[in-house]
Image (cartoon, rainbow, N blue to C red; front, side, top):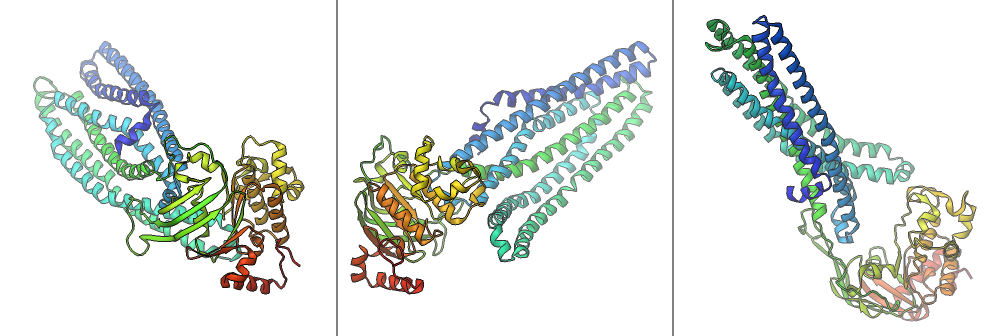
Length: 601
């Protein structure tokens, strides 16, 4: 994990190397200051020499200033290095997610990906900054202070052997109790983000059903779990400060007791025993040694958090899409013909360790031995009950998923032989869940073709029956859309998504129940425009209303992943009982007869 993450320090390695050097130099000077202070007291104050006081006083000021300079420099380089490291990580993760196939996206929840891109990266960033700064400072300070203390008086330094084991054992016990808690917290963060995301996205539904209290209870439950876990961890870590203080004061008491006796016995003579200045330096070293141990303990806690976060980040970076372009893939799609040859597809449900989950949901077959031929330029309607795998079928065409068995062909060639970008550029999909992004209408339409001219945009708006309502908007195509297109109606969102797909000028156009929010008259106008303007484009229309597909060249009935019947409207009315029942039910419900263009007779 460390090896994989360390690759993303690129561009900031110089700062990451300089920072520990600056910190070690800072620590070394801090260790020298008590030495100088001891001489100032012994030779200057007790010696009664103003020259010695001036000399050592100036030396103290110089040492403090240089130490401060190294500390300030490290305080600048460390944040730059850690922020750059975090920036590289986030960019790499985001780019990786963009390359995921749908199977990989299904593996990680949206909330989990967001948490990993934010909270987890922040934890790793903080740990990295601590490693190059505090982790360099604490051990160097500990080693230098111990060496200095033993040089001052090796007998008196044995006092540290009493307190240090107490502190080290205590820190190990606390860390062992805190580690599992922090590991558990991250999973609860994912749950909390999921609750927040669902609530914000579905705010209108929440308010319309007056379920605010229910949503608050859901949030309180997961937030309360995080609070209890962190509280438990903080209660454990709260013992750290008293324990360090106890060890510090114990050392000081022992140093003052034994040191005082040595000073009295030697008459403040360095050769015979110990001086007052040396005792003062020993007290300073005691504080530095024990504070270094405390800093190390906090580093271990932070590394515990960062280790779990690092594992979650690496999971995102290690995930490999199973759908990729072949070497020297085909760069041209001959036409829009589509063939499904004995196609079977099953969803594989994996946990976040990449292992297939147990139980009945381990594998779920969605399509069974599908055989279907669609000529280029045909209009094909797909109808079937909810959950009959209509969407799954069409998602195999642009390789959002790959067939488990059998072959899907476009333009007479297996879709797996095409360059992936080439294939998807020739297949435009208007998905069941229409997504518009914050920005202008024009900016959203240019997703279909960033080089589209104003004339092409107007033509796409006209064919999708969007021209009228866009022209009525305050700034026309330059009018602002909120995130998700929340400031326009569902039918208008659907029509803009159709216009965006048309700008791709594809050979295959797939409409996945994308006119469900459009009135029947507008639906018929859109289909009529398709027939007149896009006769050479293969059109697949998934719909619940027979009126939306009855004028198609071929209508396919799918039930539980199997093709039950296919043919024209007239052929199915004569030969398919299922189709006839659906037609009669919808006709009876609507109370009107439908002509082949989907309008009322």
